[in-house]
Each structure stands twice: as C-alpha cells, then as structure tokens.
Length: 155
Image 1 (cartoon, rainbow, N blue to C red):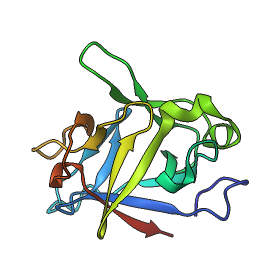
Image 2: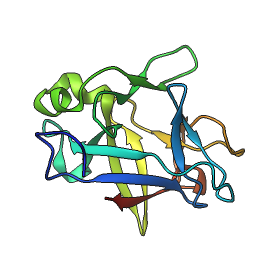
Image 3: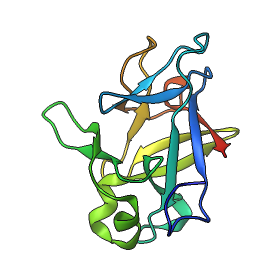
Image 4: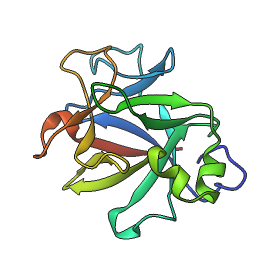
C-alpha cells in the first residue's frame, strides 16, 4: 500500500517494461534496469487517479512510494520531458486541471499497459534500448515493446 494517510486504500505498484526490466529511481530520474541484475529491483510507485479528467481513459498520477514527489511532463524544445517534481500526490489528487501535466492515461494492451501523457496526446512513456538509461517520453502512434509496461501490485 502507499504510505499516505489519505491513500490507504490505494496500492503501490512495481513497474517493469515489456521485457521484464524493472524501473527504478536514481538521481531524480526514472531508469530502466537490467533484468539479470540482482542489484536493481523495481521501484515502488504510488498511483492515484486524477478525478478531474475523463475516467474512461483511466487517468493516473504516479509518485514515489511516500507520495512526496511525482512524475511530471514538462515542455522543452525537443518535446515533452519526464521529470520528478517535489509535489505531494495527495495535493494533486485533491486538485483539478493543474494536475494534468502529472497525469498519464493508462491504456490496456492485454496484460501490459501504455502510459500516455495527458498534457501531450500521442506521447508515451518509453524505455531506452539499453539498461541503466532514463525512461523518457516518446512520440508513437502504434504500441511497441518500448512503450508497454507491466504493473505488479506491491505490498
């Protein structure tokens, strides 16, 4: 479960890519790990819904396990970037439209999910080809293993 008082009914997840490589935090970046390494386990991520957006699109806000930092999409010259920001997930859960840049639409692809940036339609969380590299936002029209993730419920 998330270690948040208000979110005690929401669970934490560990996220892995389509090749079972775990995602983890290091130096304020979400990185993809090596599935053969015992040194890096998947990071626990707290997930809450964004209640102000279309619920049929399964809008979620993701933060670190204690909910004090959340993943946001920010504008750059090259397109949107993924970054971790010091904002409480409970504040975003209570908020409205201002939480959109922290929101991802969870799109089911069978047993996996794609995570589309709510503020940047057509941009999805994507893993690099090499382990130990940052997860980024990539423009993609068709599903691929680079943009598919497994959510494993964590205890």
